[in-house]
Image 1 (cartoon, rainbow, N blue to C red):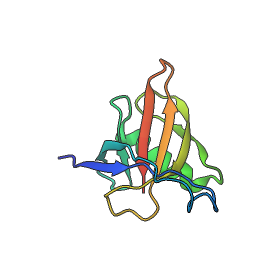
Image 2 (image 1 turned 90 degrees about the vertical axis):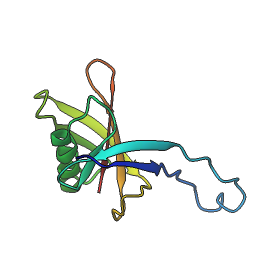
Image 3 (image 1 turned 90 degrees about the horizontal axis):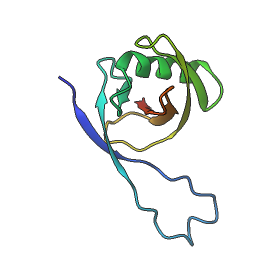
Length: 111
C-alpha cells in the first residue's frame, strides 16, 4: 500500500534578501513513497524503479543535474534536482524534475 504525503516546495532566498522579503507562498504537492523508502513519485509517467535510479544517480554524481535510466522505457532522462521540504522525515530531501519524450513531466522526490 502506498502512502500519500503532502509537502511544500522550498524557495531559495539569497542572503540579505531574507530579512526584507515577504514570505513566499508554498505550493503543495502529493507523492507516493516507493517501497525502497528512498524515493517517491508524483506523476503517473514516473515509476519507482526510475525514482530509485534518480536517487542512485544523484548520490553518485557531483552535480544537481542527474542522468537516470528508466527501466520502464529503457531510456535515460535528464533530471534537475533542488532542495525540498516534505513531511516524510527525510534528511535533506530533494525534488527532481525532468520531461519525457512526449513533453510529459517526470517528478520524483529523493531522500
